[in-house]
Image: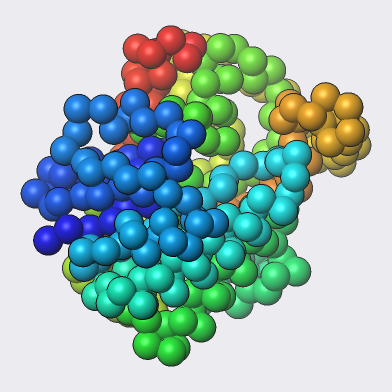
Length: 328
C-alpha cells in the first residue's frame, strides 16, 4: 500500500516518514522543488516535486496512493509577507483535500495544531471539545491553521474521510530548521536565555507524535480531533530540565510580559520595514506567552494508544541531536 506524505522534510513530517518506513509502508513524499532533501537521503522514499499551491502537482502526487498524511504547513512566528500563511495553510490544504477526494483516497490524517484547540476562559486545561473562535487565535500561523481545520471539517461533513491530529510542542531528533520550540532548546544550550517570560506549554517526543499519526490512520474516528501531547509544564520547569541535562544555568530573571511587549512591537516593526529578517523578539511569540497552553491528552492516549515518553527523555534526545550536529 502506497501513502503520500506532505511535509516529509519538516520536523514532524520526517518523523512520520521514518515511522511509516519502519512499519513497512511504501512512502511517496511531496517535496517542493527548492526544498533541501538531505533529510530524505538514503531512505526508501519516492520523492516527487510539487507544491500545495500547484493543483496539477497534487493530483499527480496522489495518483496510486490509497492514504494521505497531510503534515506540511508554513510554520513560523513571522513572515515578510503574511499572506503566505493563508496561501499554504488554508488554500493549499483545501486544494489537497479536494484533489484527494477526486482521486479517491481512502483515508486521510490531517495535521492541525494545538493552537487551534481552545482553552477555558476560567483557566485549566483545554480539550478537543473546548469552545474556540477565530478571534482567540494569536498570529497569522494560528489563524491560518484554525481556518484550514474548519475547512477540513466542512469537507468531512460532505463525506471526506479525515482524522485530525493536533500536536502540542514536539521536541526530539530531526529538528533541522529548527522549529520555534527547538530554537528555545538551542538558545538555552548556547547560554542565551538570560531572562524569560513565564508561560505554559505541553511537550511531547516527536517520535510519539509520529506514532500518533500512524495510530490515527488506523484507529482514529473520522471527523474527530486528537490532541497529540504529553506533559504540561511551565517554561521555568522546561529550563530546569534543560539545566540538569546540559549543565547550563537556568535563567532566574522573570520579565513581566508588559515590559517585553513594547520591545517585541519595535523589533517586529524593524523586521517588517527595515531589516526584512525574522525578529529576535517575535511579537506573536510574546502574545502567545499570555496563554498557559496546557491540555488534556487522554483522548489520544485512550483511543489511539498514543505513547507517553517522559519529557526528560525527549529533551535529552533533542540536546544530543543538536549538539552532535553543531547547533550548540
